[in-house]
Every structure is written in C-alpha cells, then in structure tokens.
Length: 217
Figure 1 (cartoon, rainbow, N blue to C red):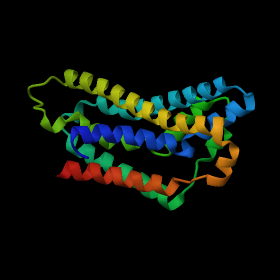
Figure 2 (cartoon, helix red, strand yellow):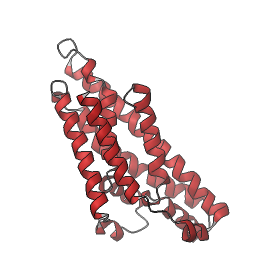
Figure 3 (spheres, rainbow, N blue to C red):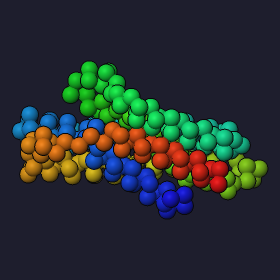
C-alpha cells in the first residue's frame, strides 16, 4: 500500500468508507428527501455534504502543499503527521465522543455540518500521510527543482486527492442513501443501524502506522 498505485487506491477506498459511514451524513440526505417528499432533495443534500467534505479535505491538505520547508524536512513532517493521525485514532477509540456543537447546526446547513464532521472525526486528517506519500519528495533533489515548482505541483495533487476522495465518498454514501429512500425505507435504519466509530478509530491508527512505516522504511 506504499506504492503510488496503492496510495491512490487508499484515497478511493477511504472515500468510499467515509461515505458508507452513517456518521458522515447520508442518513440526513434520506431525511431531507423524505421530509420534502421529493427525490431532488436527496441530490441537493448529497451535493451539500460533498461540498463540505471537499472543502475540509482542502483545508487540511493545502497547507502542506504550500510549505516550502516540506522540501528539506519532509521526513520529519511525515513522521509528525503520522503520529498525529495515530493520536487522533486513539482519542476516538477511548472517548467515542461526538462534539456537541455538531448537534446544534440546523439541517439546512448540511455543507457546514459536513465540513465540521470531516474535521472533528479526522476524515481529512486521515488523508495527510497518504498525500505526503504521493508527493514523492524523497525522490526529489531539492537543489535541482525550484520550491515554487514543487509547491505548484503539490497544489494540483491536493486538488486531485480531495476531488477523487470526495467523489468516492459521495458515490458510496449516495448509493446507500438512494437505496434507503427508494426501496429499503426507514425500517432499514432502525433494524440495521451500524456504528463504525471503533472501526473508524482503528482505521485512523492503521493509516497513521502505515504512513510512519513507509517513512521510516
């Protein structure tokens, strides 16, 4: 999973996993469609969720693309990022708490809710070790490539990672939301509600550990 193909696969799989997780908002899209009794409300809600998630990815990843020190201290930064992801996973596994502020955001502000959830649950943070691995900075000769060129290239890479991840996220969650709205109904949620909080925590720890291993290895 440390090869380029493996890292891109991790971007897609993490996005699909985020989308299928009820905690990332697809039940809210179902709720919007049922309350308005219009299928178009489902698509609007999913678009809002995708927009908030995408901005959260950019908000976390973009600063790394703009860091000139990434060229000279990429190993230290990758180690630090991996340790932060592991710490976030351990925190979620131990506390399993949801920030109270999320429950105070009205349903009409789904994009804001999605943005804050992606930050609070570490969804955006999970992509940092993957993104830094895709940068391939350990293969660069800092003396032969301008910092500005590297920053521009990494900026485009951030957009690609955030876009592909969000597309996989909204596809996974959207398909499940559409199935619940059209065929499965609310009874599906009440009977088969699945809590992925602990699995989410372990996935953060796993991604951080893989990032740490690839950097030190």
